[in-house]
Every structure is written in C-alpha cells, then in structure tokens.
Amino acid sequence: MVVDGAQSAPHMKIDVQDLDCDFFTLSGHKMLGPTGIGVLYGKEEILNLMDPIESGGEMIDFVYEQEAIWKELPWKFEAGTPNIAGAIALGAAIDYLESIGMDAIHAYEQELVAYILPKLQAIEGLTVYGPQDPRQHAGVIAFNLEGLHPHDVATALDYEGVAVRAGHHCAQPLINHLGISTAVRVSFYIYNTKEDCDKLIQAIHATKEFFNGTF
Ligand SMILES: Cc1ncc(COP(=O)(O)O)c(C=O)c1O
Image 1 (cartoon, protein in one colour):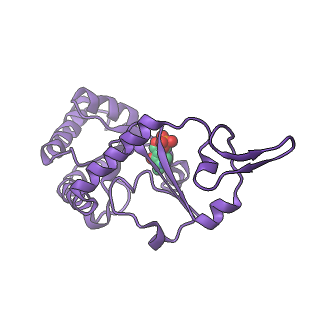
Image 2: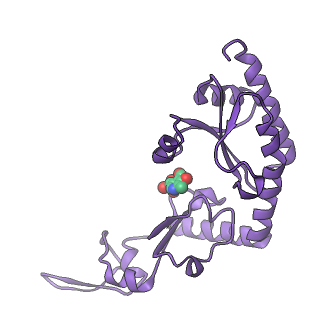
C-alpha cells in the first residue's frame, strides 16, 4: 500500500506507523520547500527486500566482476551525489512548519474553509465538489461555474489577481467518477487570509459578470 501524501503532509500531522502504510511519499515544493526533492518512507522490512533501481556512488559495499553488494538502508537507494542543497532546504521548511505546529496549520486551514465554503456554495451556478460540510473538507476546493469552461474561469480569475488551477488535477479517474471533464481548484495554505477568500468571491462574481449572457 503506497500512500501519496503530497497533498496531506503539508496540511496535517501524519503518523506513518499509525496509518500502517507500506510506503508514504511527500513532495518538498508543496510544503514551502524547494522543487525536485521529496521523501519516500517505506517499511524497513520491505525496503530491505527491494533492489535499487538506480546505481552510482555511495550505494555499493563491494563490487565484483559479476555482482555487487549494496550498502544498507538508506544508502542503497541514494545513488550518486545527492541533492544536498535541496535536502537542507526541505529540512528547513519542515522545521519552519513544525515551529508553527501541524495541528495549528490544520486548524487555521479549517478556519479558512469554514469561512469560504458557505460563500462559494451560495453563488448561483457554482458547484463545489467533495464534502459540503466544511468540517470534512480539506483546504483544497474544486468547483465549476455552470456554462463556463474551467480554463476560462481560471484565466478570468487571474485577471482579477487570483491564482487558481484548472484541469483534471492529476486525478482523472476521480474527475470521470464525478462525471465532469475538468474543474477549477482553489488551494489554501498558511499564507492565505480571509481577505484572500473575500477577493476570490469578488473575483468569481466579476468572472460571472464578464461572461454575462453565456449562462
Ligand atoms: C497528490 C499529488 N501527488 C504527486 C504530485 C507530484 O509531485 P511532484 O511534482 O513532486 O512529482 C502532486 C502534484 O504535483 C500531487 O498533487
């Protein structure tokens, strides 16, 4: 069981032992860290059974003509010169997040979601996907505006100074399950404020006005 935690680890406390997953991954650039680095957690007994898929410096113990013996974990999987600067920067990002506290981060995002979700739900022609109860909704909200293509909505919101993402969000099976082709997605993090939420709502109204007549 591999858990892709790219979208959870930045937002809440994760205990891989409590989850009892075999593997857990996270991505540095989604938690205030640099790009090109992340974390792969794996159960030690499974990692010990696995062969490395990359070879290079620092991961071998002995090399013979016909075979090689790999070093112990974690070196076995860390072939070649590592992304040293990235690892230090990711460590600093994690220290920073932990200094705020993952529970505090989660609680703050929940506060923003509780603030914005009813405002989004109240907009005519807007469909919010996922749980409608703010207490069950994460700080990532996907929606569509009736009659408008999500890419048009995203471009119009951009003109209003609000950056969102449009598309299938690397989740095509879910998008198919919802019976839609794409959606707009707004994501909150610790640097967002209630003023940002208000700006989004104003920008959605401005977008609706801009496309007035196409509804
Ligand atoms: C759930 C999820 N998994 C994986 C990724 C990809 O991470 P990375 O760009 O670090 O490969 C993303 C976003 O890019 C994501 O949202």
